[in-house]
Length: 342
Image (cartoon, rainbow, N blue to C red; front, side):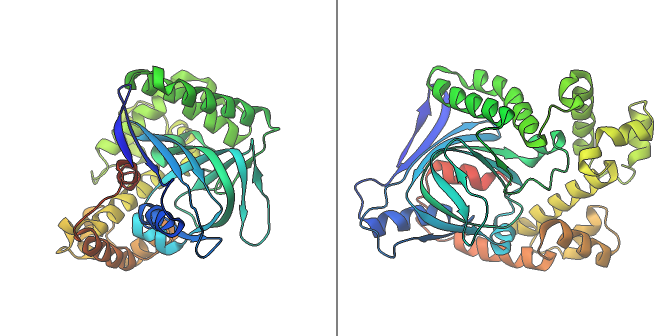
């Protein structure tokens, strides 16, 4: 296990080579157990050599993995347990990845997208990957139908996917020479290229810096005033001197401004339900504090967005607190980075 600064970019890794197979797999399992249910394809592998390196670039993570064959799933229980709301963009340099039953396989050169807010059940074979972790708040505004990209396969033959692949490979190769400021300066282009590949074409919004800047400016305003009782499409449009129609166009990929506000508030409620600091506050009170005055409609909206009920999230938060209070947390820094990306 290695943790050290890397040319000014926070870097952390894990290397199980040299450990007995069962011990190595158990260590790997401990680092990912909050996010995945892992199963080795052999009950007691003689060797389970994992090499994982992570670079923390602000609120974005870039990693390279070399992992033996394994089965892994991300269930509704995992999603409710960790509350992660991000995309995992995985480029396969070697090996393969596919569903456990049947379906489309990702092979060397392909890119596979995982929406961490949705379930998956996969099997991988001796993978060597580059993996980009992007918060939904960063990538989602640039996607059309942002909730419909889970398990989207970008073929190595697709020109936009090839551009994204070359970009990620080049960025990864140059990290040792880059400062953190330089790496962060590159990431707007990385996000744009990822969105273009996922959307299948370069959207007009991505060709218009003015429109993009306006969207980000309004999004920042909404985030800063998310609990204001009078935050709605009418007041926002008036604040920025535009029509409701034009405002709605900027947030079309989120289903409109009202939907964007609702999603943000629901995400805040989920975080509060998982936070021990709010354990003495009722779910109804938390919902009302975030603008939901009718519990039944709130609970339905919450379950539609996250696939679990508010009470289930609170119960798992209590369970997670009990687990985290046990002594001897020996997780590598990268595992804690992932856990912080909620």
